[in-house]
Length: 376
Picture 1 (spheres, helix red, strand yellow):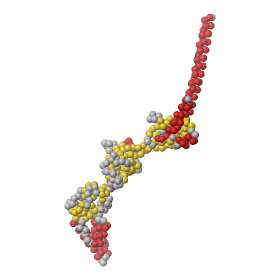
Picture 2 (picture 1 turned 180 degrees about the horizontal axis):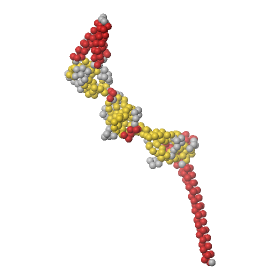
Picture 3 (picture 1 turned 30 degrees about the vertical axis):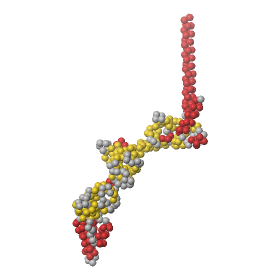
Picture 4 (picture 1 turned 60 degrees about the vertical axis):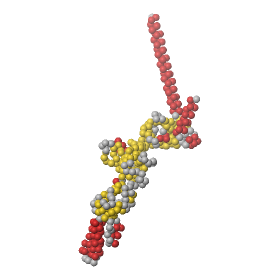
């Protein structure tokens, strides 16, 4: 009997303690939840900055709406200056003969149609006499039959075509037609304005038809051939603007990509991109090495913000979001690609929100003041 009573009191005591512990635990959980909520509210409150319009105006705070944009990422390439292949030529003799005079030499600048050399050619003199005879026959045929006129006209045009092939100017042909006196020397002329790259002829040399006298090029425009690695090909296309720099001259030269070549160099795994540049200053020399920078689009459109809006350090970034006209929230964000001008935002912002792009440091100092004031 006594043993049964003892067991009863023991059980009752254990149950009482258990209930008490459960009750204490429940009260503690409620207390922790309440403290957590209060801490969260404090964190939210401590990330907000409240300013009146007077302070906003004098601080020069400016905001911008968050939008999706493509990221322009600079791509730097090595390159080399080359000739504009449309403006390079080999000046040759169109007729056999002896060089009587050389008027230009290596590195001389010449104007279009300027005489660069003169030759004595018996073949040229004979062709002039042939043209004079054709003119006279054409004139006489006017008194004859139509068949005579057609024959004379055909002969005249045939000889005229021979003179044209020799690249005689209109003035030379008209002078020959008018005076009917052949020139002693055949004049070799520059096909366009440019620079003599190399002179290969000397007075007294006998040249065959087609033999080269000068290497010649117009250097007022040049091509830069830049090396684009295979991995970057999708980012480069014709029409893009390019900035070219050299170690020899200060400043930059500006051009446009006009062509992407279709062959990959098997050793360097690069493709040539051709950039056309104005070179009226003649500072860029063929075979000169240079660096090329182009702005390329990186991937698909994403949220992009000005770098001036970005606060924090290399590990953590945040921005100030305008909640309304007088309240700004400090919000941590996760960034992706960053340039000097813009940063890609991967998380933390929504399209359409308004962020502070000028005045972030002022808000940062105001937030520190408010936080410091609350702690005291």
